[in-house]
Every structure is written in C-alpha cells, then in structure tokens.
Length: 369
Image (cartoon, rainbow, N blue to C red; front, side):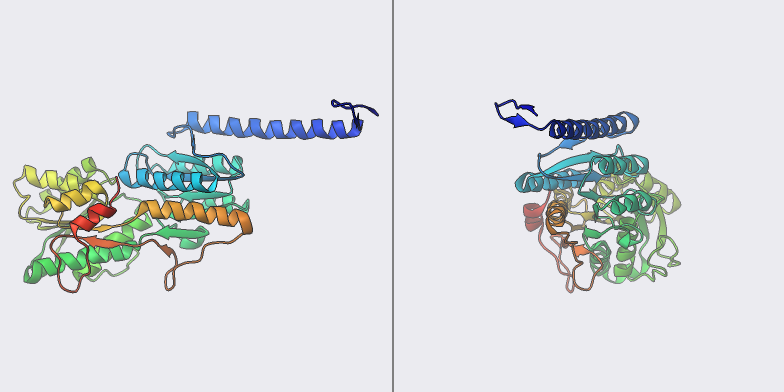
C-alpha cells in the first residue's frame, strides 16, 4: 500500500485497473478519430458537424447539403438535438444519388458508437446491407422522407405520404384541365435511374390521381396510356429539369402537362418551356413545398405543389432516438400505414372541387428554405 495523491492510501491494483481503463478509453477515442479522418478524406463528405455534446449520440445522413429540403431537415435535427442534449453528427453527399458516400457515413457512425441514425437514402435498396450491420449493433435506424426497400429494412420511417402527395397534384391537374384531360400530353420528370422509393411513389401517385392505369404501382414507366409522352430523370435539380424537359419536347412538342419530382426540377422545366415560348400553355405540378417553390406557385410558374414538412421529420427522428436510448422504445407507424406520417398539403390559389388544398399565403407561412 502507498500514499494516495490527497494523503490517503491507494491500492496498487486499483491504480493498475485505472491505468488500464484509461488506455482502453484512449484507444477507443483514437480509433473513432481515425475513422472520421478516413471518411472525410476518402469521400465527398465534409467532416461531420457536431451539434451538441451529450450522453446520447446520433447521426443525420442526407442526400445533399444544397437542396433546401435537406437544409431544413438538418436545421430541425440540430435544434432538437440541442434541446434534448443529443450529440449530433451530420453528413451530406455532393449530389442526389451519391450512394457510396452514404455507406461510408453509416460505417463511420457505427464506429463512433452512435445510438441512432437518421438517413435519407440515395439508393434505397443497396443501402440495406450496411443498415443491417448498424441495426445488428443495436443502433436505431430511421429512414426520413424516403422509405428503404423493403421498408422494414429500417426500424422506422418518418415521411410524407409520398403517394398521396403525387395523387393530390394528379387529381388537381385532371380537374383543372377538365374535358381536356382526356387528350393531355404528359411529360414526367423523375429523379434518377435508380428510382428510389420516393421517386416511384410520387410518380405513380400523380398518374393514378390523373386517371392513368398505373399497372404495377412499384414500377415507373410500365404504363401504356397514350397520353404519356415519356419519362426522363433530373437528379432533382434545376439543370436536370431543364435538360429532361428539352429531351421530352423533342419527343413530342405538344406536351401540355408536366409532373416533376420536386420544385427545383419544375423551375428548370419552366425555363426550358420558356425558351420555346411555351410557358403559358403548359400546366406544371410538383412536390416539396419549399419557399422558392411556393413562390413559384404564387407567380404562376407552378400550378400546384404538394407541401411536405422536413423539419418535423428530422425533429421527430431525434426525439425517437433519445427515447430509444432511454428505454428501448421503437416508433410505431401511423394507423393504417407502414410509416410515421408527417403530413402533406396541396398548395394552390386555384382550388378545385373535391381536392383539399391550402392557399399560397398559408403555404408561405409553412414553407421552408
């Protein structure tokens, strides 16, 4: 036995145990630091941003950090994490569809000992392997906005009812055209060739709402309705929307209805139509409800859009991770659905009978970005 630092007596074996525990904790910290360094140098992510220190750690992985939808999602997660004392690391790829960097982000979150992961997957099928690895380690994985395939590959999904979002704009477009809907020429501007679930759900919902026989609702492009001019992909951005619109106009210059996966793609489609002097003769509908998109509804660029609420998705996701860390509770789906529904509203100043909607003014009060 020997004197302790404060004049008491200290057990040598206890000192050894404390030294060993210090070394183990030190090496864990070093391994975590190395994993984060490798990720930031080997892929397209910036170093993860830490929102708040705390006993519970979580990760948010979005498709990009440019699209206002994901910016608002990050804002919602960050604010809620700060409120609840959750340590949050956030990651984002360079572009929509950047699957490999999302895989590396999940791996980094596993190595860092995250209690929960929130993810908007670029490739909803391919991501399931690394998601399973995370869940096998006892990590709660929640898909935000975009369900994984199959949906139960994640512990829970917090999302807009994306099929309903598409259905609302389809019903509105059909009612707005009236008798002319029977002879419509429809261009569909989708997301990516990978066709993640959100892409399929919105596309198929729109067509069903417009009165098209959608055949297999899990497949884009298998319809045989002669009103469909074709599909093209946009990567969910303005440049992609413009190029896709130009491609479909070459196929049929009589397009008069345009569905777009989101509002940046809709803005690009409008610019393409404008360059051909067609901006006044084509009805554009979309999904998102960001402030720039709602303003485009106000200005007549977009006829109607379905508004979703990304801040709510992310903040509810952080709440779920904190609850899971406390008592192991896993979120339950909304009654009648296989996900937690965070709501959707059609925004237009030209309402039609039988299709519920809110005004542009109300849409601007609720918008994001």
